[in-house]
Each structure stands twice: as C-alpha cells, then as structure tokens.
Length: 236
Image (cartoon, rainbow, N blue to C red):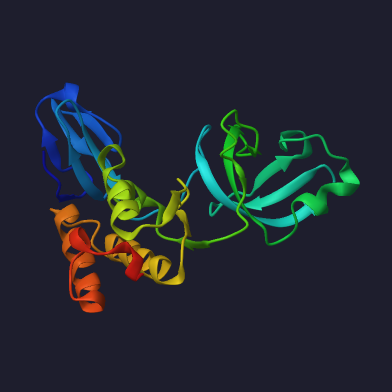
C-alpha cells in the first residue's frame, strides 16, 4: 500500500495489469494520466485527482439545492458544471404540477440520485429508491469541499466516515458531488466541519487516519481534558 503525489507521465508500475482509473499504459508501464494522489492497492493502481469539478455519473448519490421550479421539473444545483433535472414523475409520490412548490421549493436541499446522463450532459435525477433514503433534508447543515477530495473523507471501504461518525457522534451523509450533510447538536456539527476541513487540507498526506485521530483527540482534550476514547458522551 502507498500514496504519493504524481504528475502526468510518472511511472507507477511495470505491471500493466495494475492500471486503474486516472492511469494509462505506455511503453510497458502504468503511468499517471493526471496530477493527483497515487492510490496503490493489491490488484490495481489509480490516481485520485487533487483538483477538478464533479462530473455526474449514473447511480451517484448527491446533495442538491433546488434553484427553480419549472413546468414538470425542479431544476437542481448539484455542484457541477451542469444542472440536474428532477422530473415530477421521479418524486416518491404522485403529485400534480400545481402542487410542486408545496413539496420542494427554491432553496430546499435534497439527497438525490443521478438516474441518467445523456451524451449532451442532460442530468436526470430521482428521489425514488426502495430504501427511502433519498429525501428532502429538512434539518442539519450542508458544507461543500473539493469533490476530488471526497474519497479521502470517505476512506477505504468507508473507514474514514465511520471514524468521524463514531468519534464525533453525529449523523453524516457524504454526497459524491463534494457536498456533505451533517446533523447533530451544534458542538458536534462544528467539530465535524472542522475535521472535514482538516481532511480536505491534508488529503495528500500519508497516514491521514492517524492524523485525523490525533486532531480529534486534541480538540476534545482542549474541551474536556480527555480524548474521545474515554469521553462521557453526555458532556456534549
């Protein structure tokens, strides 16, 4: 396992079978296709870009903001170069066109999913899912970070986001478009935001999980005189 900053053309491996996203094969070697953080696994090497815009892909779960209520569609800002369209038929229940603003109005935040993206980058969204996770976000706070840093906030197999939820004790949802919804009391939400910003700033550094644990311990020790491992949750 290993992570380091790479630039386009850097040789990452001589095993061409290891080529993953953000890489290409040339002259018998796997090379970086972009500027970013090399992510070397057991069976693949990929490069996580350190800068760039969110480009919607089908099945992405994203946090959007309603910017307009049009005829049969809500126009949604999804933190991308392209707006998303949420058609009235993709609302979880049947409603009439004249009722649209009663269910979702300008300024509302929603947890939605990219249903389809066509060749002209028309982005269709949906609020329909069998688990009913997709919904309007009526409480909590939403922050935005560079979408390319989102894999570091999530962590390998979700390890980093689990650490944040456990150590801070608040509910969080990480959208693939660089937006994060955080819900809890004000102290927990403030600490979660500080920690996410710390991860964003230090996304390129090795040993990030240990750094984040130390960051959280320092913050909680300054407040309670002890670390999160032995903190009494009722003191929040």
